Image (tube, rainbow, N blue to C red; front, side, top):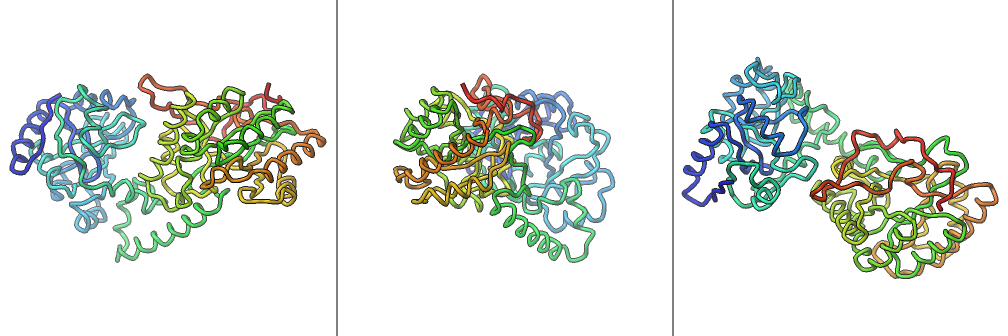
Length: 469
C-alpha cells in the first residue's frame, strides 16, 4: 500500500497520484466530508468488485458515488426530477445524498441490480477535486471492514485495510462526521424517496415539520422503555409455559452478585446478569465467576449514562462496543444480549445493535429496586406484573454507586422465588427463553458475528421449561 500524506501545498500532487491509480482500475482510501471512503472508478466493474473484497462484504449492497460538480448529475443519473434539482441547488455541495435512477453504463454490482444509485456532491473540496481528476465521479463507500464502525482516521484505515488498497490519502482525521447523524434527521422517510421533499413548495417548512414529528417520536420511543418505535425489544415469549427469565442489572456488585447466584442455585436456577463495563473492570473475578457457575453475562453499556436517550451515534456506539470488548477481555465471550440503561433508547441504538450482533432485551416485570430500602413494595410490584414466559428485571448493582447496599433486592428475590415456585413456575435465563446461545461466535479477527437477519421476536423453539442445570 502506498501512503501519501497531504500537507499544505501538496494537495494537487497527492490528488493527481490518487486519480491516476483510480483511472487505472486501482482502489484508494481518502477522506470525505464524513468518514474515510474507498475510491474506485464507478464505471469499472473489476474495480468495484475490489471494494467488496477489501471490505469483506458480500455483493448485494449498493455503493455510493461522489461527483465533482452539481451540474454533472445528469451524466450519472437518468432524467433527475425537478424536485431533485431543487434540492441540489439548495444543498450541494454538502452532506446530502440523493437516490436517483442510474445510467445504464454503471455496472450492476455498483447499484446491486436496483437501477438506482446514491449520489452526493461533497462539501469537502479535496473530495470534489479527486472526483474531478478521476473522471468526474468516484465511489465513496466507508473504508472499513463490513460490520465495523466507519473510520475517521488514516491510521485506522491502514490498520484495517492495509494491503487490500493501493493508496491511502492520509489527511489525518476526517474533517467532519455530521453525516452519520444527518442520515437520521428524518428517519421516517424512506431513503429512496428523500428527493421527493423537493416537490413541496417551501421545503424549509417541510423539514421543520419533519423534525417536530421526529422529536415527538424520539420522546416516546426514547423515554418509554417498552416502546418499539426505534426497533424491536424482546420482553418475553408467549407459549413458553409457566417459566420466567430472571435478569439482574448494574452489576457486578462486590458481594450481592454472589449472594444472588447462591440464592438462585439453591433452587436449581440460573440468571442473566447485564453488567456495566466499568463495574466489570473493577470486579473481573465476579464476572468470570458468573460464567463459570453457569449464569449469563449481558451488555449494559460501559458507563450506564443517564443521557443515553440523548446520545448521538458515536456515543451510542462507544458505550456498546467498549462494553463488548471489556466483557470479551474478562470473560472470553461477546454477549448476544443487551439492555439499555433505564430502558431509555435513542434513534441510533438499533442500528448499532445490528452492527454489534446484539438483541435488545426488555422486561415484563421490574421491581424499581435500584434504590429501594423496603423489599415489600418491590416484591408486590413484580408479582403483580409477572406472567408466564415473561422476563423479571431486578438490580444486583446500582448504576453509579457500585457498593450500595442490596439487602432489599436480595429479600425481594427470595420472596418472589418462593411465591412463584409455589405457583408452579420454573426459572430460566434469557438464552433458554429464546432457545439460543447467550454469546456470539467470533470472526478470526475478533469482530462480532451479527445475527444473519434474524429479528429478535422470531425466536426458535428452545428448552425454556427446564431449569438450568
